[in-house]
Amino acid sequence: MATAAGYFDRKPSSSVRPGLSHLQPDPPSPHTPQQQRRVSSAFSSPSISYRSEEEAVIFEFGTRHVSAGFTGESYPRCKLGFGPEESRRVGDYRRWIPGYGERQRKKQRVGSWGEDHELWQMDLRGTDIGIVEDKIERAVREAFTKYLLLDSKSRRLLVILPSVMPHQLLSTVLATLFSNFQTPSITLLSPPVLSTVAAGCRSSLIVDIGWRETTLTAVYDYREVYQARPTRAMRMVTLEMARLLESYNTQKKGNKPGTAGDTSEDHRSDVLGINLDQAEQVTTRMAWCQGRQGSSDAPLDTQDVSGQLGQVSIAEDKPSDQSRNANIDDASISIPSPSSPRQCISIPFSQFAPPVETSLLATSKQRYDLDDHEQPLHILIYKTLLSLPPDGRAVCMSRIIFTGGGSNIPGLKPRLLDELSAIVKERGWDPVEGKAADERRRRLKEISSNRQLPRSTHEEVLKDPSNTIPAALAPQVSDPIEDKLRREQNKGSKDTISGIIRGVETLGAWAGGSLLTNLRIKGVVNIERDSFLQHGLAGVRRDAEASTVQQKGPGTGVGRGGTSERGGWTLGTWA
Figure: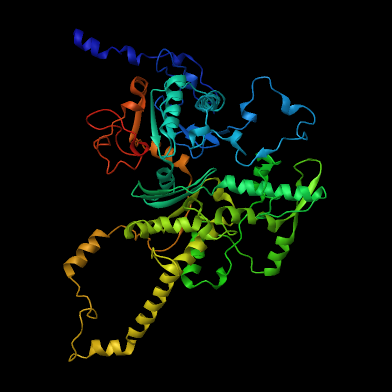
């Protein structure tokens, strides 16, 4: 007789209860198996549970645009602007009225030209913080409801902001996201570090050609070690393009024509009749940069730069036929007239290059007429590398990364690298410049050439055992133990490229933030909602221990932890 224990052992449990599949007829083959839906909680829907609840959302704020998307993706889901068309009220349909595009527009002053398309400015003396807060709220709400299609209350946000910005703007961004969208936590990340990560490097020189200013940041081992911020950027390029269009539009009406780079009072007036949208369209489609004059006669070191750039796909193919280049430069391009879109104006293709060279390279002015923040970009790149230590300079000069909207101008990257190579060949890494410095270099070259020992004499001195060999000419005695240790240390590692001028491509700051977040790497600046709403920026810890536990330095923007062991939070590079 079976015992009770044996009976329960043979009895199937409720979790493996036999079904009634044997009573159902076999489905025809092939067939799709039925999906077994599992409800994770009482409040979640099985149809929309394909995304993890822990997935974060990335926002990148710029002067004119904001990008939003999910982590693990290579590009953002949306990119929203802050222009007048995006800021209209509900029910404002003026843009669809017949003849709205041909209306007579008011002329704008050069100082305030394009300000209605910007979110903020680093100079807050004329900025309304309330309008900035409303623009941020409207753009973020549109991104969540129209493109991301999710609730913001349970989502952790990663915000990409410039590391050098006023605390009032930083506080406005954080307060808007915490108060209006109930975000539990926000992590701040730095664009130069993320651009370095997206390029697959640890150290680099980031040249971010933005709208209001160009940011040059030297990143060494994921830490920002130097930064310069000149005012030569895309706003200046677009402004010069608007002046070019206005001069040719005036010529079509029968007045005296002007050219790009003209310094006359008629051309350099304080008002412009071309709006930002028209000038930006022409700049995006037609702007280009000429190559450096005499680059074909450059030495071997400069010519090697073009070969190295070909490996990273930022070099420019140069046609061999010079007559073909002349025909292309003389070709006329028909562009709709700014005053009447139904009419066209003809502009030679070669005239679209001077606005870029005048704005970014300062070819129309002498260097002694420019201030420190108005220097050409290639000069500032050289000065940035010159200010670094020798080891950091050798690594960063081989990883120059161009990013931002201005980096898409054809021919600009090779031109900047050629100009930098010419400066290095002419001056070396000597911080002193001027006529006296040039004369000193010439004398040193003459002295070194006179003292240089012929190669045959040098070999005879080394081979003759009776002669006493100076210590400077004696060969290095190799140590077998050190050689073995060096071979073991370098086993399996690639040689680091350094000491040459080279450009590297990057996927951008947004892609770098998506990559870091997908790898579960936390940021140094991790701000909780309750802490910020209670104390604001006044609750920031400013002591030396306000960093990550496993972080080498406070300037990286990424790390393995958000706060230190003592608690609290820090602004890191934003402090």
